[in-house]
Amino acid sequence: MTNDTADAPATVVLRQPALIQRIADRTDLRPNQIKPVLEAALMELGLAIDRGESLNLAGFGKLTVARTRESGAARIAMLKLRRKAGIDADSAPDNAAPPLRNPKQRAKKPATEG
Picture (spheres, helix red, strand yellow):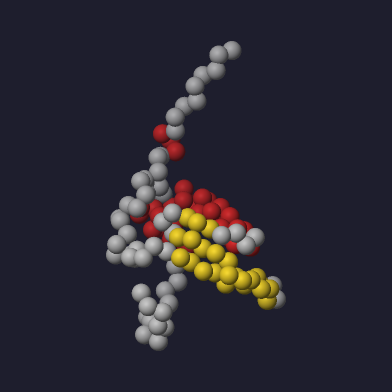
């Protein structure tokens, strides 16, 4: 991957419904199970960035806040993302993480003696 932007293809925007579907394709979860968890995770990531925290997430990389500024009703954050070299859509495993356990298969709590 190079830093040349002159020959770069048009930017593709990944929106939440497509991300939810990609996650569903990698797990045994349905989109309606993924959506609330994804929304909570995105909220926490956004709050961490607002606080200027660095993120170090396996499978994603290390994200640091380079600088921030306020612009009207928006907060603009300039971010730096460092990812492991050689990771791209073609090299990512089809199932990078093991499927999550079905919530209906939760272990039952042991009975308490009383």
